[in-house]
Length: 53
Image (cartoon, rainbow, N blue to C red):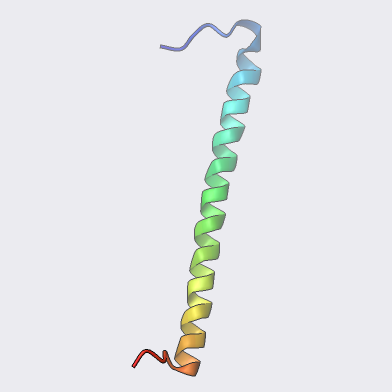
């Protein structure tokens, strides 16, 4: 059950909404960057050989 926020309801809910949106964006950018780095690493390994054998 949601507490009565009175006249601050819009500010509080907007702050929560902005926080969740920014956190979601941060997660998305982190995943995108990680995939980009993995692709680059795979290219370098393919070009130079893995060297694990």
